[in-house]
Amino acid sequence: MKLKSLLASFCLGAVVRGAASFVPTKHHLHHTTTTVIKQRTYSKQLTSSLNIRGGDMSMSSSLSSVLGPAADAVSSALVSGTPLRAIGGLWAISSLVIVPLTFIRQGYSFSVGYGFSVAALALAILSSFNISLSTLTSSTPAILAATTAIYGTRLALYLLLREFSVDSKRKQIKSFDKTPRLKRVPLALSVSLLYAFMTSPTLFAIRGTVKAGSALEKVQLISTIVSAVGMVLESVADQHKYEAKRKSKEGEDKFVGPSTWSYKLVRHPNYLGEILFWVGLFGAGSVSFQKSIVAWLCGSLGLAAILSIMLGASGRLDAKQQEKYEGQPKYDEWRGAVKYSVIPFFK
Image 1 (cartoon, rainbow, N blue to C red):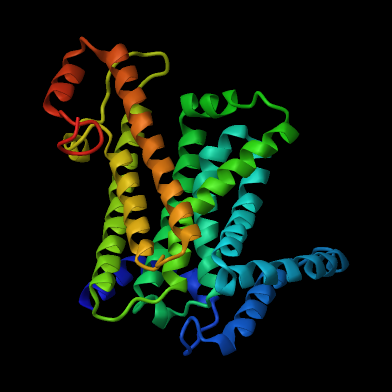
Image 2: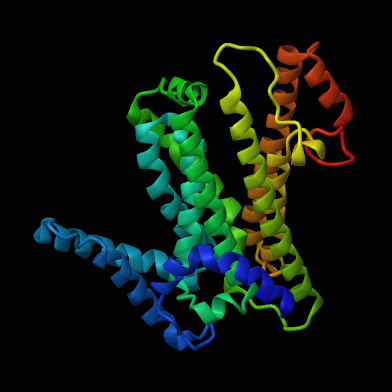
C-alpha cells in the first residue's frame, strides 16, 4: 500500500482537475447494478460540454441527440462489452482524435496525434468507469490509467512546443503533407487502431480483477512503477534534447549534444523511456488478460509494434549522427564513452 500511495501521489496532481469531474462511486468498478448509471453519466458529461456559452443551442441539442447514444455505445463497450467490442470502442475514440489532426497535418498522425490519442483513450477509460479520487489513490489499474493520460498529454504538448519553436521540426512536419486530405483517412484509421492496441492493456487492467496479496498483484504494481519511471525518463531526456537542439544553428553540422545526464547511460534515453513506459503498461495489463485471445493478441501486437518502431528509429538515428558528426572530437568522445544505443548492455 505504501508503494501504491507513493505512485498515486505522483499522478494525482496532474489529473486532479480531470478526476474532479468524475462522479465518485463507492461500488466496485464491475458492480453490474451500476453499469447503466456509469454509461449515462459519461454520456451526460460528453453532451453537456457541447452547450458552449454563446453557441447555437438548437445545433448543440441536435448534436447531443446524435452523440449521446454513440457515447453510450462506446462507454458500454469499454465497461461491459466483449473484448473485441472493447477494442472497437478504443479504436473509435482514437479515430476521433487522429482523423481530424491528420487532415490538418499528415505528420500529426504519428506525432501530436499519437500523444493526444493516448491521452484521450486513458481519459475515456477513467470516465467510463467513473474513477473517483479515492479509487485513484488505492487502485493500481486506476493509477496506470492516470499515468497513461499524463504520458499522452505531456508528449503531445512537448511535440507541439518543439514544432513551433524549432524551425527544422516545423519544416519536417510540413514536408509530410504530400497526400490529399481524403486519401489520408486510411493512414489515420490504421494508426488509430495501433494506438488502440497499444493502450488496450490499461483498459483490461481496470476491467479485470487481481487477487489482493497475490503474486499477480505485485507484478501489476511493479509494472505500473516501471511505466511511470519510463514516463519520467522520457520527459527529462526530451527536455535535455530540446534545449540542446535549440542552441544549434540551422544548416550547421556541429554536434551540440546532448551528451550529459541520461545521455551518459545510452545514446537515446528518450527512446528507452518510451520503451519502459509501454513495457510496463503491457505488464500491468497482461495479468488481467487471463484466457482472452483478443486481449493477448491486441496487446502483444501493440507492444511489438512500438518496440519495433523505437529500435528501428534508434538505429537510423545512430547512422545519421555518425554520418553527420563523425570526426568531431565532442561527438567521437561521447560515442566512444556511451556504448549502448537504447537498452543498457545491448549494443
